[in-house]
Amino acid sequence: MSDGLLVVISAPSGCGKDTLVAGAMKKMPGECFLSVSMTTRNMRPGETQGVEYIFVSRDEFLKNIEEGNMLEYAVYGSNMYGTPIAPVKKKLSEGKTVFLIIEVEGGGNVKKIFPEATKIFIVPPSMEELESRLRGRKTDSEEAIMNRLCIARQELQRAEEYDYIVENDNLDDAIDDILAIVRAQKLSINKMKNKVKEVIYNA
Image: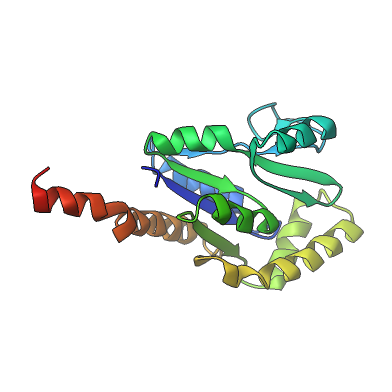
């Protein structure tokens, strides 16, 4: 088992998962690492290569899969998204808390390689609120919004596959909930059993 803690964060589009993780990491300076996903989608205005995503061609993405370089990957819409495994393993070996913000489909694949991973699913207060947030972005067409809401309902049905559910109604409360989960997991028997042995044998 690695020394660090792997935390998987998933949520339907519009639930604020990126904002929540950014808020949690701000309260854990030097303790955590955000895995940057690889994607075949086009870079949007204001985005930077290697910051929001690692942008690659579809051929390069498929090559990484073939070479066993991906922790997980999934197809979302017409694009592919995935997590390079090397940076994750490196940061876990350094004892860091590693956050993965990934699609629901990829969440299950992570557990196959890291069964000790902690999975958190973010839910909106209601579908009405989620629709309001999506419309508030003013970046999607009516068809795109309806499609996102349809996908959201399907993803919410898979929330029970996760270890914890956090409702993002109040941002600060939701961030505190994530931090509480991280603290609890760090104190779990799986993480602390070596400490117990040190106490017993004064190692």
